[in-house]
Image (cartoon, rainbow, N blue to C red; front, side):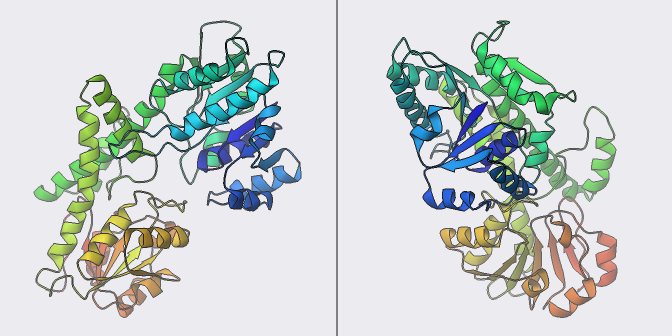
Length: 457
């Protein structure tokens, strides 16, 4: 089967490469010449473990190609996956201009092929508000007229950055929305089952449902996971006020099989491109239909407040130490989570911005997100240095702020760290370290949902 991915961002590239790796012939289309040239050389423009190897293998096997030519990309495709961005507007609602432009481009090519063509299936894989796939269908029909056949579908992605290849190859589930979904001979449903068969043959379910429900599944899933993160952070803040330890609370709570362990880790809150955007999109959908999404709004507000609460700990620690002006802070981690170079909505950048505005010197280190981090710092007007490694970052620092839980940060050389810092103080935004150990080593230690350790007074 011939498949076309519209957009070579995170979703389009991972999807295209993984489909090609099962024998499909995949064309990836983009409007960025530099990115297409990079991909044609077998170089991956994003950091995602395992993706570069699959990219190189399938280019060599001639199952994976890249192009700027829309007509070339659409002409022979059996299915076209729209994988373009849906950035939030000023009110938080999803901007659909790229999705609808892709629909118009596909329609223009379909129209030239006439009525004798095999019907193409146009699939919206971008995360879109409920009803968008039908807008795509209607826009295509408006352009091609009543007689030229085509099908539409919706196929939300559930890829975690840092584990996307594994998630695609071994999905918890595959969700597909089609028109007339109860039909026993729906061509779009048949196509979905065929192309996903290699990924579902080991018992991973594929759900064929109506398009509106398919679109809602992605938002409902991400909103629920975001809710879990905001919930555990709210409980962590309550623990601090009463002197309880959120790590112990979490252990006792998560032993209940109805609750489980995933996404219940206290920290600086969620970031990235999905949870913030999708939570706000659900709030926006509620506003459009006159239904207040109270829980989703609170989830978003709690998450944003979490960064301020942690920053207040930093301010309080230095209140009687001359304040923040002139201090140097080492940020361990810029990416919003480990195993990715994505810095969108990263809590680290929020804290860096506050430190810079308070007159402190900002220095940061990230194993992967150094370039993307520096670019975003420049965009935000944050004056700071990117260090070459974690100890160079901490040299002469008045405090280390652990903002991303990369493995290499989990067991540092404490003696070395204590010798190179101006003040032995760690702000542990990911609860990586044991309070007793840091007390014994002579470090001040502030974390999330646990009593602080102060040893230098």
